[in-house]
Amino acid sequence: MSEPLIKIRNLHFSRGANKIFDGVDMDVLEGRITAVMGPSGTGKTTLLKLIGGQLTPDQGEIHVQGQNVHKLKRAGLYKLRKKMGMLFQSGALLTDLSVFENIAYPLREHTNLSESMIRTMVLIKLQAVGLSGAHQLMPSELSGGMARRVALARALALDPMMIMYDEPFTGQDPISLGVLVKLIKQTNDALKLTSILVSHDVGETLSIADDVKIISRGKLVAEGTRDEIMHSDSAWVRQFVEGEADGPVPFHYHGASIEEQLMQVKA
Amino acid sequence: MLLNPIIRLGRGSIFLGKTLAGIPQLFVRFGLVIKQLYSVGVQTLLITLVAGLFVGMVLALQLHYTLSTFGAEDTLGLLVALSLVRELGPVVAALLFAGRAGSALTAEIGLMKATEQLSGLEMMAVDPIQRIIAPRFLAGFLSMPLLAAIFSAVGILGGYMVGVDLLGVDAGAFWSQIQAKVDFYEDVMNGIIKSFVFGFIVSWIAVFEGYDCIPTSEGVARATTRTVVHSSLAVLGMDFVLTAIMFN
Image 1 (tube, rainbow over the protein chains, first blue to last red):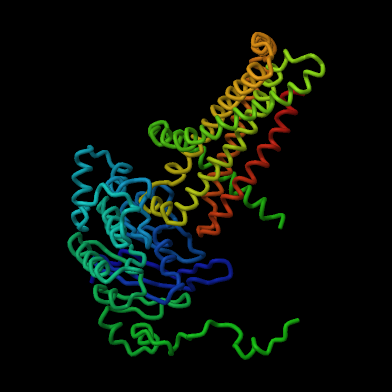
Image 2 (image 1 turned 90 degrees about the vertical axis):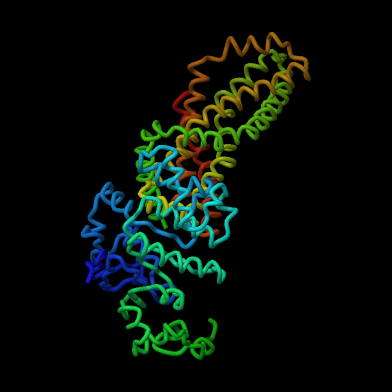
């Protein structure tokens, strides 16, 4: 069994009075695609920001490649981030730069490569995501799916050891969705990366994930390999995987019942 | 209630410290500043030219009306020049700068935050304060005195057009009074110092509001409004303080 690349221990994190994580332990194994799933608003994106050191936990530790992310000094954190690609939900492309310049950006910032070498590398990365013909386009000219593929090419530019995908499938048409699913799988296998895939699209995510973690209400409620999760008899997991309205997760938002609210007399 | 502005001032000061610390790095990447000088400075030029011209023309009309009752029309050039160089040039140019460039800076940075571009840079191990904020701040700081100088120069030309060409003031008197009585250090330099201070304040408020905004449509809109309101008030308040120090 491979060593965990990311080790999360006793993670606590709150936004104001709202507890996002309440003692989460999690391991992400090297070379695998780990899906972090859960209902909307459970802090999946927050988890990626905590791993990337953009947010600091209230309590607990996150180790990436043996280094405690939140104990690192700025230079150390930036050094680690060069090895961590991240694909944002919106793509997060710099809107004033062309597709080519967006992918060249991390190379220009962190390497002393010649212009011809940068050009070659950018075109190779774009070819890998099937968009070498689109290098002169501006981000505003790209569809949502294309923007995410360009963002993936940019995340791959520095040959990272891992990539974090934040909701890559949200709002995609079936063709873009299929392309992205295939790309994530191929990229992980071909480049021997470790991928963390945050999503609530059950079908697409389970089709490529090796390991699955399900979080809800600040806790890790289920974890295991894809097959273990798919055949789990936990009522919670079944409700989430099969998308049922009734189950351990209530359909109604917690608060006063409609009867109580209707009976309230306005002062 | 009272604590919130103090907390924001503290955050803004720490942010300013980080921005200033990022400026030395810009000397090796001066292209970033030049790009921003264009969008912050050059693109504010037209509104500055037009406003300067009209302010100078109105000043000449108003002053001529009063001066002519004392038979002192010859001092028109001097009064127009002093009003512009000491006060109206730096102040009105700064107000225009806050409305045109400051709001644009806040909206741009706020939208970059809302669309996760700033987070994206951080995750690429690029400091957004160094690459995005510092060039914009420096460009604003450098542009402001130039725009104020252009405003004053065009205003004096506007005053000349109205005073000399329209109202018949002697051209020689118009220019010679300016040459004789406008002191380079006392008047021009103090005006330049004012415009540097205003450029610093407006640019600081604009980049901070953008960086600190709530990353939603409403948050960006509020931050943009705050930039214009706070910058304008800060410019007018600082103008009083600086004038009291310089000319008292």
